[in-house]
Image (cartoon, rainbow, N blue to C red; front, side, top):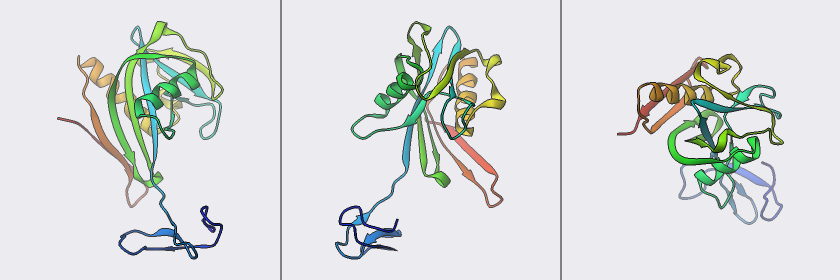
Length: 190
């Protein structure tokens, strides 16, 4: 960031008085520009023991499969965002939705909030961000062609719970260690 979006003057990167983190601060109007993590909301939509996946028509990871999910917008709840993204990406609707997992990815400043729910009538068709939509059983999931590690983790948790006869709500994180290897820690909430 070079210029203040509030007044257009230059900003500096410093720790503001009373704060403990570096922020961009305007040199003229003293406006503090807070940058916070982005929330991604999505859904594991099931119909007749199959999960809805979307093949991405956009970057990043164009042509790979993902769950319907995307950035939360202002003035909506995480559930509203998950339902909106499911409709935008797959023209699909979900019911009986329940929180499933929250996974923080601090090195890219993202938090994934995933719900699980029932896909209404098993209907889907590609939205503008999807090349294809498809329902997959666990053994049909294109595991090697999933777009993001967090999607793989979410699906593995989901199928583990489903196969064990009950669902938990999970909280966790995916971090890079000092060797840039991804380390995942996810725990059920008690």
